[in-house]
Amino acid sequence: MKVTRRDLLTWSAGAAAGLLVTPVPWKLLDDTSIWSQNWPWIPQPARGPVDVKQSSCNLCPNGCGMRVKMAAGWPVGVAGVSSHPISRGALCPLGFGAHQLNWHPRRLRTVLHRNGTSSWSEAKAAFAKACSEGPVVVIDGYPSRAASSVLEAFTQKRGGSYRVVLGAETRALAPYETWSGVPVTALGYDLENAQTIVSFGAPLLDGWGTPGRFTRLWAERAAGMANPQLRVIQVEAQLSRTAARAWQWFPIAAGAEAALAGGVARVLLEEHLVSARGPMPTVTLAEAAAQTGLTTDAIRDLARTIVARTPAVAIAADENPAIAALNVVLGAAGARGGIVRRSKRTEPYVSADAVLPSARVVLIDSSVPWNFAPQTDAEVFRFAAWDGGSNRADWLLPAPGFLEELTDVPTAPTSAVETYTVAPSLVKASHVVHSAAQFLSGIDSTLNTPEKIIHARCEDLFRRRAGTLLGQETTPVAKVASVQKLEEQLWKGAVWVGEPRHPESLRCELKEWPVTVASAHFESWSTTWPAPVLPPLASKLYQESSLREPPKRRNA
Image (cartoon, rainbow, N blue to C red):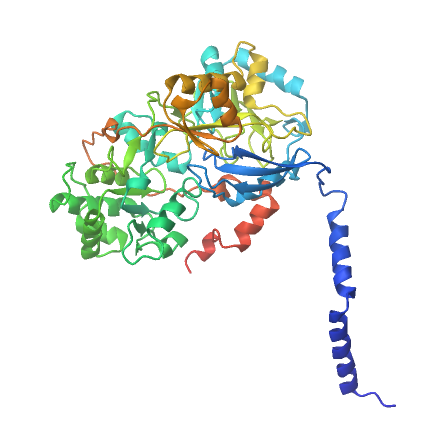
């Protein structure tokens, strides 16, 4: 019998169709999946009871609420908490995959000294010796924590210098500290009461602030509305995700945000569109148009649109005094729906970006972004849970990873009200780790421990009898029976929320228009956490789910 090419094709097609309806390929796929999941190098949680605990993420200062699924004492899943007063159920991609970080290949497990391994005892001896030989500088990334108090107290006792690394969102508030004397860490945005928000390059719908706060406001008051209750105006050179969803988008030349802010302020003052008074911007309307690429009529229309529905507030992506001055002209500084003071703190922090004094030793806390490198010739001791690549540290010291350390979570940057909660230790590290605060307490036994400071802060909240505990139930602190009950609720994931302060407690004196500066690059979780320390899930979400487009595609 002669077999033709047609017969072969027919037989092949029939065999393929028959194979699909048999259980053979599906059984092979299932067996392969099971086999691949049991490779010896893949961590497997022990069999045991499954429990869900509520806590707060401490991977960044925003402190988002999270529900952690635990299997036999190990985290196997993370989800947001819809009742959380700030994050409101949202998490960033890093938070969703955070339970994988403790098994990341770049996890620091031993003390590293320059090009070799060392020990904790040798690191402690070297640090103590260096402190005895000259000044010490301690750099913190999340100020106001209980651990921060330990770092600050150590430097004060040693006559050293305590410095902080502030994020872009906090740096955007820095000009108000200069003009009002109120520390930048005591300021925030009253977005909930604003009706017009002008964003100068800040990615409001793409990672700005606490995940969930602005996106929920936008979804409730702006999304899909022709005449929204909340008008979002995006000023940006590229059609970003925020610009595409904003009520209006004003494309301008890159780096011309300050010029546009000056042009808008000039229109507001010349046409008497605002009641507030301030110095006239040095930039003329024609100069602003030339620098931004907009017409003078477009700048006038923008100014009139901003004040058509108030309260209105301008938000900068990073420190930009001209945009801050625009808020002063708008009357948004110290006003409802604008820039408000949220706490009574009066002492400002010294930025780590300032020139470091002559130091013998520099200690960097694990909360400091990996890409920060101090400009110093001193011996550098750096704490980190993960090795992010090349750095200038002489010593790399393994720090606690995700959920391996008891810590407290103070108010998130940009928040308009004070908040406080506790993130208990839910996991025991598989190797020896120490936080910077624990390390310094070992050097100086007279220092308080973070746990004692957290207890003291809870006692202070109870004595003040102000604010509300938001958890499974809403309970005014005045009705909490004891400090032990308050601590118990905080340990279970409840959040203390303070009372909003009167907006007029912030008064800015702007005597002359600030010098125009180019806008700085906005830092997001994707830049402060380099790729080597991202869990696989976060990397996949970042690359494939369009949560954040790569820079090269943002011009599309």
